[in-house]
Amino acid sequence: MTAAASVAQHFSSALSSRLIALRRDIHQNPELAFHESETAARLVAALRELGVDDVRVVAKTGVIARVPGRNRSAPVVAVRGDIDALPIQEATGLPFASQVPGVMHACGHDVHATWAVAAAALLLAHPAAGDVLVVLQPAEETGKGALSILETGALDNVAAIFGGHADRRFAVGQVVADDGPLAASADMFDIEFIGGGAHGARPHEARDPIVALASVVTALQTIVARRLNPATPGVVSVGSIHAGTAPNVIPERAQLSGTVRAVDASSRELMLNEVKRISEAVASGLGVEARVTLDLGTPPIVNPPDATAWARTAASTILGAENVVPLGFLNMAGEDFAHYMERVPGCFLRIGAREPNGPVIPAHAPKFYAAEESIFVGAAVLAECARVASQALSVSG
Ligand code: NI
Image 1 (spheres, rainbow, N blue to C red):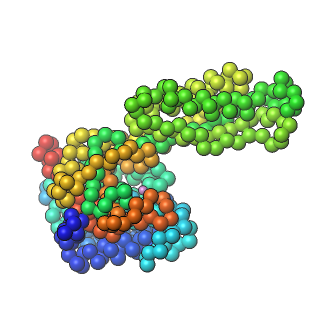
Image 2 (cartoon, rainbow, N blue to C red):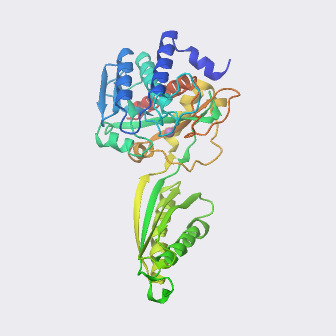
């Protein structure tokens, strides 16, 4: 029997069919960031049916359940599942495919929400040392949901937090709990070039913002190539440029925007500072003003050693050490769980979501879905992370 199948066996048939129905219901009725009100209502109802009494709606469409520990005054830990869908037309052909045109759970958050509810049920049956908050978070895809939960103050006294992402690059039953960088920062920049317009035939009367923009696009490539330590991954990409209205007119202004991805705080700061410095200096050399606006998104996720050791212990207990596997590559996408980890130590895991012999399907693709059995693996591993961390914190506290 596979590790995933043996984990699933530990769920009563009543509980598993309830969880599968909940997941299918959420998958069929996807809702976009901060519009997850029906999803939140379903999750509240599911938690109450499972016997979790302390459940409240926070941050508009988020839900937090408090599962009592054996000692109510012991340190509190949290488990997080995100709940929002994406503006993509589903093409999975699943019997429970989205009924909402142009909206689907293409990132597995239907399963993340379900495994968090399931973790609450497991923790109710076998409590942790202290209370556990189960956080059902809205709006991960826009990078704003974790902040909205933090702003409510609901996690102010939390001593550790755990979360995971379904991932079809790994078979169901495999879990990644690596320490170090796991997801990149996702920051945006916008640059406005202010020059002087003139006739295209008389460039000497202009201060050409298009030439400045073109030079800056090229110069920005030197940040990763010449400024960043080659041992550290990083990305600077320009994604949009806009200028001009006619072939014989040098415009007054030009504009570009792009994104910076980094895997640690110092390279993030270096790259963002260089975007500003190089753009201003190159444009200024050409007689054009560059106004740089940085829009800070999610920070990188860097799993710290202590909390990662708890997560590895938990995953090995549930699945066997041979199923705790390395990521094996660096993920340059962002994940807003990083906002929690700026304030609370924790660990973010990748939870295998591909059926044995099933295809690898990238997240955010119209055919993406997470294997059903990953519900049980995610729930069991996250509940055990909470128990291990809670126990360790109670002893040390
Ligand atoms: Ni996601």
